[in-house]
Length: 454
Image (cartoon, rainbow, N blue to C red; front, side):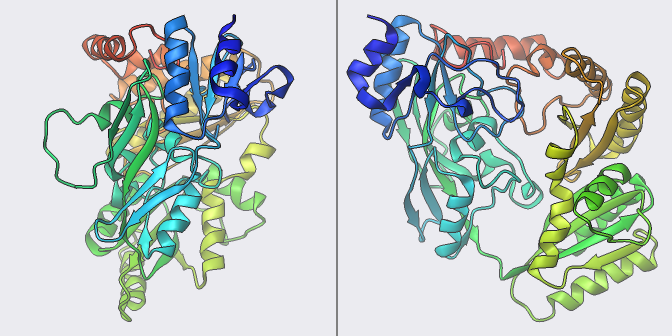
């Protein structure tokens, strides 16, 4: 009996094989996956996941967990010899505890669904990504996603209080803690957050909720230099107590996406554009103070122009330029790179990186944008003459410069397969060996997402 037959006999019709496997299971958003998995399991409970892993572990069968498939590092891609566990049916908000300020949620729940449930209960779930409509909570945790609210609320791991995880041998470890302070030995949740499905399958999480802001003020600011971007960030951190987002766009990125969205926001495209957002407490004077703050920055020539959104629609229009979804359809063979560097050197890095990429690929589109306040920079690269070697060459150019600046090759997208060969650019040999020891301890047969990260 094959492993697929064994799984079908044990789990029934939640196991798909052959022509029943849909194309969506071939690749994440990097579009680098080539093969459909051998079978797809679509569980609705932790017990079903545990039963599947017990069978696969006994057979040494590779298992890849799949969520919303919005990742950009190949981490959810399965080859033809692997079994995929899709969490798309394991969804739902199990509890909102208003007294504890927590939400207990199943791993397959789309992020936007969880955000709306929190809002309905009068809370904010601060994890927020551009892919909120399709990414899933389990994937957010498995990659330790960052997003646009990190400045105020931290990355995903900073908003998780408890986890339930199924280990490679089928053991269910349930630690659905609701307390902020819980100093009882090793913090086991942190082994799995950011592990990209290589150490266990995250099935449930207790997420920390925050008070729901009374509203938000959004401004789009023009700046003449990266030095002014850094100076403006420091000024915002001092002068805007509710600062929740600070997103920078270099000229070429802003120009491309503003034109794609058919928006003419400034008379001339400035060298840098920053989206600044502030959460409101509900005081009547907050908007006046926000306008006065921006006016002071203009007088001191930190910024050269500022547009304040007058409505939710106008705020969304600012964000549509920053999120840059038009690039996915309008730039062929788009490569999205995600790095992290000390804030003070990001400007120099971008200049050097842009020159190096343009020298090697003269016809390519190269542009930069990032969260900046959390050290994160994104690079959009598209070459009309791209071939199968282009991505690896681009990675080598960018990550060699990252290493010289002592940065990280992945700020928030994870390692997967696409960055695996460059992990030593940001991690020491001792760190890599410790990671391998943890992997061997928790997954001695190496069945969980093999070939990913390490």
